[in-house]
Image 1 (cartoon, rainbow, N blue to C red):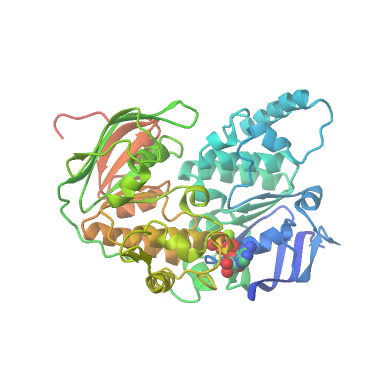
Image 2: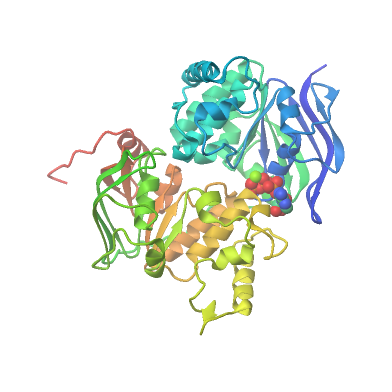
Length: 509
Ligand SMILES: Nc1ncnc2c1ncn2[C@@H]1O[C@H](COP(=O)(O)OP(=O)(O)OP(=O)(O)O)[C@@H](O)[C@H]1O
Ligand SMILES: [Mg+2]
């Protein structure tokens, strides 16, 4: 008889009246890769948090390798060989990589010796799975992509043979995703069992043996890999209707230069130069896509443009006026919106209500405030509109932001940053973690902003997204501009610049 690594039976989990999981059955075969699909808020993370001992189900049983288990905590889960890489990173930000890996593990010898040994083992694992990490870097200094590698390595290091990965590829480039998938395939050959949550259907189709689809907390069904597993079919199961992948994107002549980035230099958090003499003009009515492997200065650039980081050299000129190195609020007043890469630390105040988060930047300004009074009615109106337009799944605008699913949190930030006719949008990975429908909606919103004359800087690890939306494509590598390509450039050409091959300036172009 076939051994199941995991069997979840009739799992029900309720949050304040909402059935996040409604009697869900889930079976993971040993030595297989299983995709878990569903729209934002469908209940994927909740189900996996139950399996990992973070939440306790109201009803239902869990069997691990055929044995019924009471998974009361992550420590219990780890002891059963279950590892989890979370949607939002769980690393202790003030500790080093090695210290994080060692957390929750009993020291056999002196802590110092142990750290050295752990670092060595970690490097060996990193080498084996081709995931570059610096064991002694502090986690807060790492890019999102690097933090994720640490999470994956930690789980492998702790001996997981059932590995849950909650949207691991959302922060990876296509190349990095390929490398990760190679790793997953090796792990599968080793007999490990993997659960993969992702919104990217191509990825599901390319790697999984089986897929399970959830919708609104309910099980829709499971399917084995094969001819029937198509993008259309999976979408239909997830959404319950057809989704159109269609854009209205009129050609548009861009106008005057809105923001001129001129010879900007800036350091990263480690005080190492992250941007070197970076120059780029963004014009009104134009989307400039910035392509590059994660961690090559994109984040620092966005932060300089929004006042979150000081430039050590260079100028920023907006509508003819020098604006470099001012306080963040200055850029907000200038009409520069920022969709940050890391929504949990920069984008949202997690303990604040959703409504407060929505109008965070509008206090003291009309229409939210006038003559010193905050208009609750206006806030309510804005919330209702945002909730409706972005289909934010929340029970009430008074709920804390942290109670929302990952994708729904992102929608709140987008609603805040894209409303009110910004003059410039700095969008760093705007659709990361969004389901298909929501991604399409946000892309259309960015196009609408552009068509209304807004200047958009779009940073994305998703080359398809860059190609779909950009009027021009700039490529960054090691903090330097490698070149600018016209819309419709070939993927391999962008890829080559992303690897650091600078585009020769051709005289006769
Ligand atoms: N800690 C919590 N408190 C209250 N409600 C919660 C909590 N965690 C999840 N929920 C609710 O449960 C539902 C399912 O959320 P879950 O995070 O499992 O979705 P998901 O499928 O992982 O979505 P996404 O793709 O956006 O990550 C959502 O409606 C969410 O608001
Ligand atoms: Mg989730």
